[in-house]
Length: 414
Image 1 (spheres, rainbow, N blue to C red):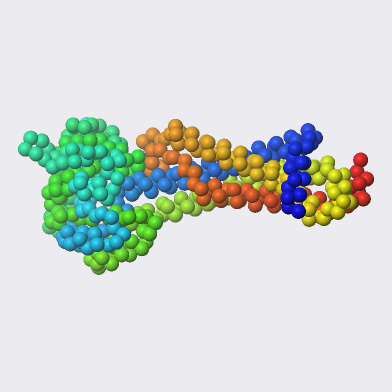
Image 2: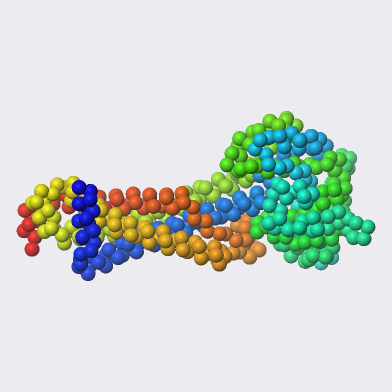
């Protein structure tokens, strides 16, 4: 019976309806297609934005950071590294030095705030995507020699503020960690800009400076080899379980943070925003299905005599309902397919030609300088299921009306 209902619905689609019905049908298909396309583009935008932020956060930094809860990094980080390396989900570890300070240059003697990250290039590339934005880091970030000062890498937006380029000198000032009484006693050092890097994450590009770990230790007079140990995981899928194992291996004297806890508010807000946007734009799809109701109601009126004949030949009301449900599904399904294809095409073009790129000032607001449009299968599945539900609900009313049509009235039609 379902095959018969589908065959009748297809015959109605292939038949030559009135101009009014044809126009309304095209409008219903176009309305659904535009609504679905808008939904695909919106979900692609927010999925791409969330993924880009996550990748930039983890790419420029480690997935998990462990730091001692003692002053001046005095804990035995070498022993900590050995314990962490034995955790099954840990791929690599690297000791680093973090210090906040001030960077200045001859063009900007007043300076600007900066985050100094002391690294060893060989170990750092094992825990982050250092090579993606700072290739050949060992040549860009190295200790001082007899002939030249230590070389550092500066974020491109910070370099713009300081008005420096590769080969220029910068002065870095940090607190003296060995000073008695905990008062701020700045220590300054002159460094050479070895490279200007760009991560596409605005916060890093506007504040970060990579320094050789030994040089930063000497400048800040840290007693320990490092004050943070970065950890790279085999997979981000089981971050919670991995963090629990790392916390157990580190012991009570250490604090453990991961990419979720450090940016939990941001990612939670993005999830809520994506859900809200899905519901709001989904209303466009729901409203556009009212055109299907109009199309099917007019089709019921036009095919009134056919319905009467089918009923006389023994067709049950359920068959007639299924005919018009199939007709609504065909019209709506055409709009959904067209909308998905159009939306995916827009997302591809926007990503391919980098249409959503931001200048430095705007990038500080959105955290990234470019947002790709990421079309995920699960997003498309949710859009298709939501659209299908709205179309079937809209088709039910005229289908039910066709099933209840009076036979005598139908045969008297025309």
